[in-house]
Length: 147
Image (tube, rainbow, N blue to C red):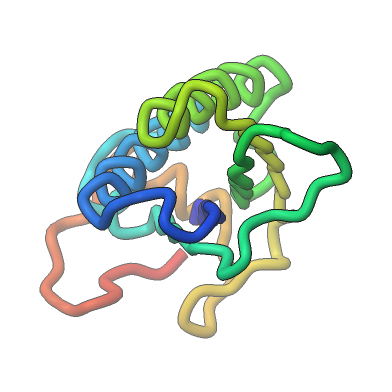
């Protein structure tokens, strides 16, 4: 929470560029959601970069390459203004990692509370707010938190 999926045409990003983009987008999403960059939220923010094997199909001839970014946060964190700021930041990061003429599609799919589970436990706004007010202690296991 949040989950971000970035789909790029095959061969668009080097492994190093993909890692930088993942971190930049994660930071932008946390900023837009007004969440701190603590260990808890770093571990809870997942960003996947996937290559589309055959690129993207479009209906326009000669269009620039396209990148699809889908951000899935819990409902209630993003206002229209925050969505717009997120769109500007994510577009900038993608275009810096690819080319300035890359077309960036950003989709925000907010999930209502009670419709998202992690490790068998439902994601709750109250638990997230708890971790904003008082960050969770450091943990050693792989998935160190529940919502």
